Image (cartoon, rainbow, N blue to C red):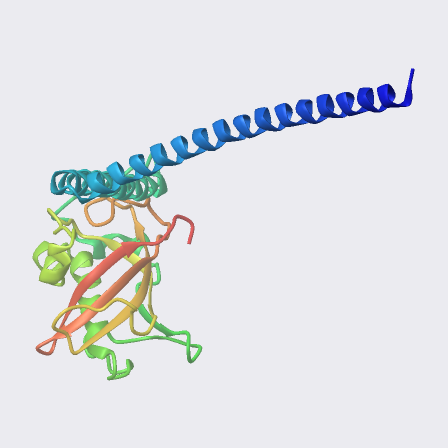
Length: 275
């Protein structure tokens, strides 16, 4: 093959190679063009969607509908919360009441009440310690006092001690009216109850222990004092205390307020069994 022919053949081959590369480049650009068109279409669709959403948000009907739905949801949540709290409160109240019932001694046998009994004729009762003792733990003192004058009791809380003393003395005499006169209107309005009919009570080992000023505030009072009161009852007939048997002790926590110079029981509750 002559040199001219060889050169011609090389030139033809080069032209074919260049043509092939150009064709491949055109195909690539076409593919890229399709990809760009597709991307632009997707972006435009997304923009249209956002535009519609923005218009929907600005629509007063849509906004009002959302407000109504939100308000309804908040109202429903409030109702659920309210009834939930109420249910919990009722459950706690029932638990407290159940604990009180559980704390009461069971199978108590009471003696038959004799409303005309002269307890001074019971020699077994006469031989017991029937003195009234006042105790002030802060000073470590405990002493018997005269239930008529209360001279031994400090004047700072004498009026309140007088009320507790009269309360117990009325029970000993079987004086129902005297017992009930010691309760305040506040006591009765807050769950306290009057005694139905009290037969004479054979109280002994009586101790009134001063416990200072209570944490709770009572209305319209110049002063309020708290006391722990304990005593035993010989042959308990249940008309004054139906929460304990004979010859045993269940302390009472008593709050007395002074109004117009007179002491009144605002609060009275029983301490736990065995205390």
